[in-house]
Length: 131
Image 1 (cartoon, rainbow, N blue to C red):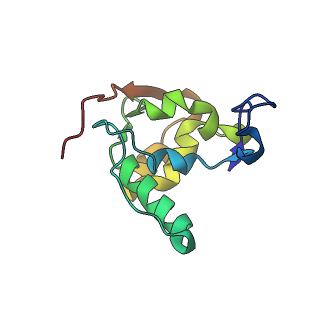
Image 2 (cartoon, rainbow, N blue to C red):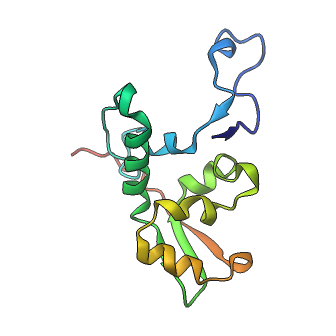
């Protein structure tokens, strides 16, 4: 978990006392707004939350595409919108996502020059998820 890039609420906001000071980026793969681009709805148990967040993150990251020849990684716009959450501690987004990728994608990413990886975003599907 990393620090939030800025306080989410003004100090006089009644929500401020309960706001998190640390952000676990995996939360982005557990929240759902009802759009097709969102992660699927799941139920989470307090005693298994860490493992469940890992599982949700791995499932969401299955759509990440790694093109070793082009030196490119393509992923959901969520990674662009919340980049600060994924890059806390001087990590790049590809470094953050790597442990959640399949082994073949991890290997392809590891073989790429980390300083020149091009990160592209897939358009977010705001269509209503009616399934």
